[in-house]
Image (cartoon, rainbow, N blue to C red; front, top):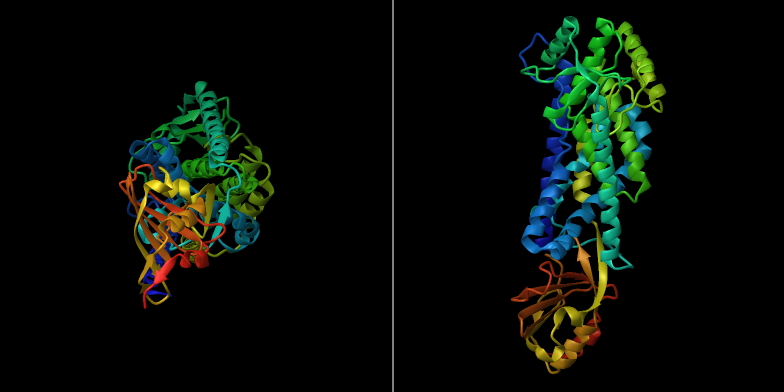
Length: 491
C-alpha cells in the first residue's frame, strides 16, 4: 500500500471509529435516561431519540436543490446519482442482512436498540465528504440501458410512493381531527400534565383530543407543533390512561414519527426492492416493541397484565406517520409475550457501534457505470483533427519514464477507440498508479487524460461541455501494449 492510499484508508478508519464511538455514547445515554430518570430528580427529558430520522432525507433534498441551482438539471441529476447510488445500495444491503438476523437480535438485545438499528443508515451521508472518499470502487456494475430511461422510471416510482404515503397520512390526519374535540375531564387532563412533566418536558404543549374516528389511542403529526394525541370515545381507568399517555409521550419524545418518515423515504428511494418494503414493516413493529419495553420498565405483574389487556382491546389503524398503541395484529402475539414475560436482554450499544463502523467503512465499495460512449466523443467533441498533442507521460510502478510520441494521430485514434462508461460515485483515485497521462489542446481549451488499468479520468481546463467529475470506467480495460507501441522511450 503506497503512502497516499495508506493515508486515505487511515482517515476513513479514524472517522468511522469516531462516529461508531458517538453511536455507542448516544445509545448508552438514551437508555440511561429512560431507565434511571425519575420524577423526583432534576427535571430533564427522560426519553431521548437514539438517532435523528430527518438527517438523510433533508441532506438529499437540500443537496438536490443546491445542485440544480448551481449546475442545472442534467448535471445535477448525474451528481445526485453519484451521491445517492452508493448510499442507498448500502441501505439495501444493510436491511437485507438485518432482516434475517432480527429474530435472534430480538431475543438478545433490547427492543429499543432493535428499533434504533433501522435508523443507523441515516448518517450514511457522511460518506459523501472528502475525508471519507474511497480511492476506487471494488466492484463496478454496468447499466445495460440508457440511464435517462432508468432514471425516469425510478423518479416516477419514487414520487408515486412518497407522494402516496404523504397524501395518505394527510387524509388520515384530516379524517381523525375533523370530528375531534378537546378532552375536558379535569382528572384526565391532570394525568396528561403529570406524564408530560414526568417525561421531563419543560412545558405542556400538546393538546389531548377525543375523536369518534379512532379505535385506538394514537399520536398523529409529523412535526412537533402539528402532533396531536387522540383518544377514542371510550372510558379508561386512571391506571390504563396513564399507561396509554406514557406510551404516546415516549413515541413523541423519541421522534418516532420522523423515524417512520425516514423509513418511508428509504422505501421510496428503493421502491423496486421488495426487501425494503418488508424492512419498513419490521422496523415499524420494532418501534412499537421498543415503546412497550420502555413503558413497562420496572413495572409489576399487575401493570403488565393491564397493559396486555389494553393491547388486545385497542387494535386500530396506524396509517401514515402515526404512532399508536396497537396498530397491527401481526405482531400482537409477540408483543403480548414480551409484555407478560419479558426476556432478559443486553443493551446492544456496542453492537450498534460496530454496525455503524461497518456501514461507513463498506459504503461506496460498488459503483454504477452507465451510458457507454466512445472516447472520441468525450476527448475530441470538435473532431480529432482539431486537437494537438502537447505532452505525454508514461508511468511505471517506480517512476515516470521520459517518452515522446512519434504518431500523435495514432495515439489520439487509440484513445478515441476506448469504450468509456460514466462512473457514478465520488472516488479520489489517489494512490492508484496512472499508466499514461496525455495532454491535448483544442478549440475549447486543454484537456488532461489520465489512463489507468480499468478507469480513466478527464481533467478539463476551459472545457465547459465536459462533466466536472470526469471519471469513467473502462469495461474492456486499456490496451497498454498498443498504447506503448506508439511511444518512444528515452534511456
